[in-house]
Image (tube, rainbow, N blue to C red; front, side):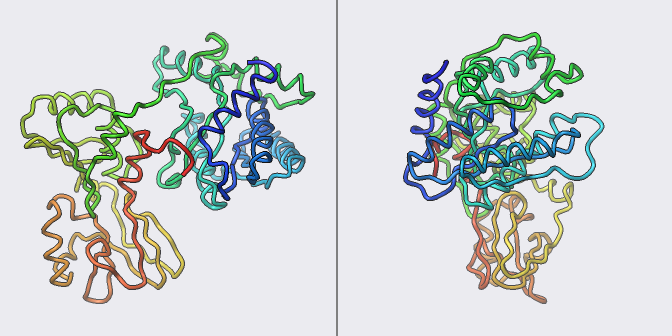
Length: 408
């Protein structure tokens, strides 16, 4: 994919995934390396042609003495492109082990927070076919590194709620992109860490092939099953038991539990075996409790997680917004104390206690309640003055299953 064909390929992906008439900015994650620099240049052309604003997000991980200079080079490119520049920094103590994974997680959190802050729904990333090949080589060597997808929800949760990642260069190799940059007279930054053989990705880059085919889309069947899921006010997901694919089972568990760590393959396999037997069973997976019988499976937050995580009461100030227990977004217009329902059910008004009986008993403990003296109110069961609550479970499940295919 050389010269004009790189431009055409990226433009086709942007046309397919982005909403040309949206007033939201398009965010590009720019490190200053060749891949992200090429992406910023191509995205700027597309944004200008469609009257869209461009925002450049640059994360300084604080891992190199040259990182400030690299951020400066990114700021200079943003200025040249007429884009807003948003410098982000990973601060605090860095882990002695697992540094690449920790840096990647921090980068996704920072990018997601910044995107939501500026009103961007999509962040463009400069992954290439070479990254696909390296991920495959790393898995062959025993890693669990996933392959990047063209379109996916942000993996940061809850920071990434409502934010999607778009990788429009997965059909181009790193070498091809650098040829394109050189033809444009562009220069780029080479991070020495990319060649540090202490890290698995650097070893894969040295030994692996230069390119690989992008992953196939998740498929309409998975999206249709997720769209048909029933999600009640408490975030309990109900799915027909027959024919559930493992990916949807894993996603339903994550979303119903409000957690962000995918299940281990062996535990997911055991749950799939139970589902196939068509007999009643109860299991836990990724912080979710699965109750299956009579042709359907219920996914809800495992009540033991309340003890394990120590969900604490939270004081909210007017104008503050929080995500409660990974499942519910709460916005306050007044001072409010939010607590887990456990121990407060008797304080609810009579109508809310009656409504609570419609929710599976095991799903009740971690529901949010607003404490006001000796009284409590659950905003999921009745409207609570000065408080707005949004259930994130179904929205997240739709995003994870591929039901959202373009910029919202």
